[in-house]
Length: 140
Image 1 (cartoon, rainbow, N blue to C red):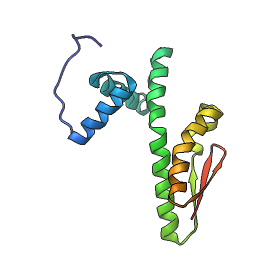
Image 2 (image 1 turned 135 degrees about the vertical axis):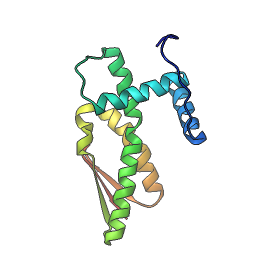
Image 3 (image 1 turned 120 degrees about the vertical axis):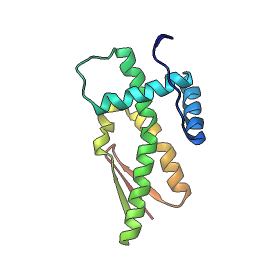
């Protein structure tokens, strides 16, 4: 990106600004570069394009998308628990099949992804069993 690219002012809630600042710091990018990377990643998946991104850019966008996986999985787990509770069930099942974790991540990467959520749920008294990379069973 160059200084010749068009500029515009952007208003955002302070909480969102703080999140973007933290993400930029963690990724080693400027605030602007972080916002551009996230926007670019969202359009990459939303509209199938005919242009090929470089392998370096693909790795960068992949890393950005991977940062969101823990939140996606955690949100699904919470929704599954709430649904199970509302139905009077004592087990919640979280489907992860559509995330293709077995194909896209190594066993070590999947373990690193699973650990924080497993620890959080177990700390709250839940029993957690991962069914490979395709589902989580949560008992309470």
